[in-house]
Image 1 (cartoon, rainbow, N blue to C red):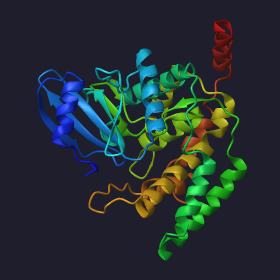
Image 2 (image 1 turned 30 degrees about the vertical axis):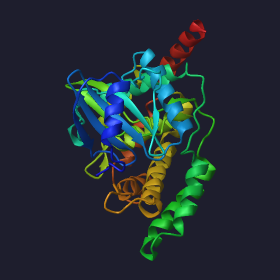
Image 3 (image 1 turned 90 degrees about the vertical axis):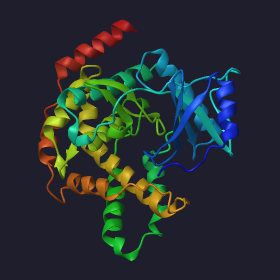
Image 4 (image 1 turned 90 degrees about the horizontal axis):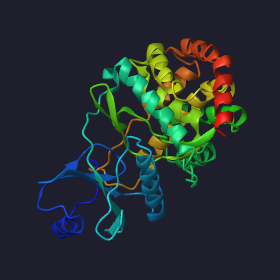
Length: 344
């Protein structure tokens, strides 16, 4: 269960007073997630989400909440941070930062159950995030840049068992490849960085919230899209071309990809797969968390994607490449750029 910090009754009483919650009727641990401790707080007035950041510094927490507040002002469906009666949006608890959010109604759907309309709505929301985020002028450091992931791999490689030799050879070869071919001069802005199905809430077809901005930062838009494709379009051991088209149709209804982004798409898919393979290996072998509490996500999920993308196994890569090669619409892109110039 991903609840690493227990709440004391004295804290519950303080929160009820400081946030004017009235009587708290229930405090329920939420097992989903692997990084933070989360609780559902129920009162006679409302339902709230309490989050304890287990790894982020105070500065990182402050920047994330500031971004969420900015997105909420622009009506983006994301968590709504609450202020206490002193205007604080987080507080120190047990050496960590604790914050309270409005609870958003909705259901997390398994990847396999996402319908075409829902995939389009996810793509549309991601496009809106990228467009709205252009107005956010404060910088957020990218903790998962290629250079940092390469360094992280070096740190974890020495801790891997001997039977991981085939895995390490593949990862080292991939890092060498991406060092030469990963493109850095592409459109950038605020990205989510971790758009998985368990970070999306739905009521019917409607996306009610995009959750977990833990990895949000300034980064390449195409990396964010590639991560969503890896997370949402890979089912039953391969990439689904239909899912890819629904997701991209939603995204491009808001923001049109440039030719350079389409060209970079395959390598960004590879980098996204590398990133999550390495961070999951790191979390399993190097994170100092009690084994009975640890929530470890299987690195094989993204290592398998990487092998498909490297053409080491079947899995729909050729169909994706064809869709990417024919996806760029020069006339549509020129119209979008003309509209942007008029707005400027």
